[in-house]
Structure formats: C-alpha cells, structure tokens
Image (cartoon, rainbow, N blue to C red):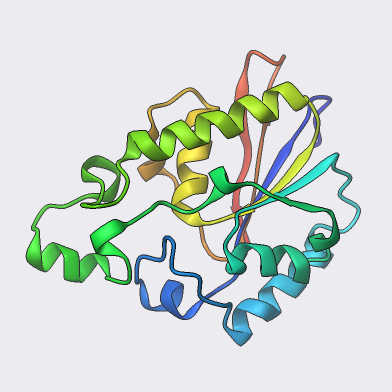
Length: 193
C-alpha cells in the first residue's frame, strides 16, 4: 500500500566477503562479491518505477557500487553521515571472536573500543532524519546494516540502542514513512528480499 506522505526507501548494500563471513565491516572499504553484484543488479527491477527526489549513498564502495548497479548511481549524492558504524578495534573481527575475549558484549549496548558507541551513530542518524524531514520528499538511501538499523530506530523516536531490534539482510529494501500525518513516523516495510 502506498502512502500520501513521503516514503524513504533504505537499501542495504550487496554481499561482501566480510558480510558473508560475519566480520564487522565499518570503515574498511571492500568490494561486493560476484553474488553481491548480482543481487545489486536485481535491485534495479525491484526498484523499477520508483520516483524519488534524491538518492543518497554512504561513502563506502559497497554502498555506492550497489547504488550504481541498481541504476541509481548517476543521481547519487554521497553523505558521510550514512557511513557504517565505526567498529574501531573490532573492525574485521566476528562477534564470536569478540565474545571469546569479551563475554556478554553487545554492539548496541557496549559499542566498540576506539570506535563508536550507539549514541555516536545515533547522532549521525539524527542529522539524516532532520534532512529527510526537511526535504519532505521521497528519498532513496544506500548504506550498511548497523547504521540503517539505528536510522530506523531514530526515525521512530526510539533510542539508538533499539536498532538492535531490527535485522537487515544484504540487498534488502526497507521503507520508512508515516501513518496518519507527519507526526506519526512508521516503518512501512522492513528487510524485503
């Protein structure tokens, strides 16, 4: 069901070697796998007919290339605030490896040494939410899982830590919007593959 109010389409980038293996990929700029490129190309059909006033992408090549392969690259504006969580000392490490050294660790609660806490990511998400609300128009965003999860939480007015309650697969599409009026932000669709 479409809405009379602006909808924000969120696209998580296609598969990378690190997303496939579960390694935390914040600022390491690695490419899509061949499967990730195929999934990104398929996004073109899934997004066919979508009319937006702007296309925004994370600066990472995995997001920008997903955007380009989905045929929106020519219109994309790179937004540094859309960058994935900075995992600091946990960059390139799996959750299992982190838990072996730090039992009970949770990203959204504990953050990362030498990287970001949920509040840091939430502050970037808040700036994006402000821009989206000021634009008052449909916008397409390409970024990464943990950032988009925090963005969804902040869209709803939830604490950034509540991004832990949302899961995103690679090359998935989600839609943020409104219900009865612009004071009622909602998630219209989530993690569609």
